[in-house]
Image (cartoon, rainbow, N blue to C red; front, side, top):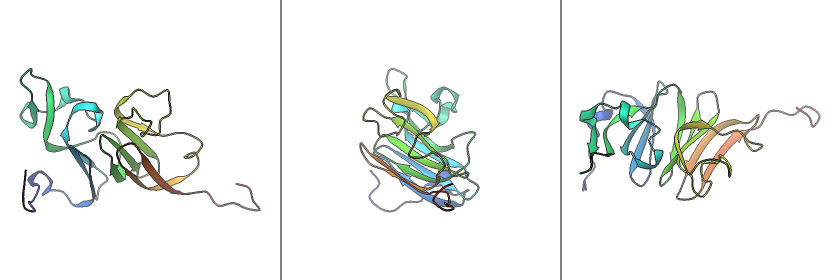
Length: 160
């Protein structure tokens, strides 16, 4: 427990433009679009493969299983503009306006539909009738829900 506001040392070298926190994990978006994550490693909530992380940054339990990432690390391959952390999952917006989700999705809170696994280990694009053709600009999440906000394409005489 940290009883007073404290600087997160692992973030001091970045210019953070947005930050969010789940139950046991946190995430921050940098001005360059990097998504930095840290906290619990179970349930896929960080979107990282624990086996690829530096050993000195990973806290392991008594059996040797990776449990916690103590230092912020970037989620590879995608540049983001916004992140919403739920209890055990995330909904993020890429710089291109696409929605991605990952983490525990047992109640369909990842927006990936009933055929998705309960644990989404890496950022996965949300593609469905509610997101198709929409430029996403905001995301947030709670325990068993998520929200997205976007700008639909302009209509001309009632058509795209």
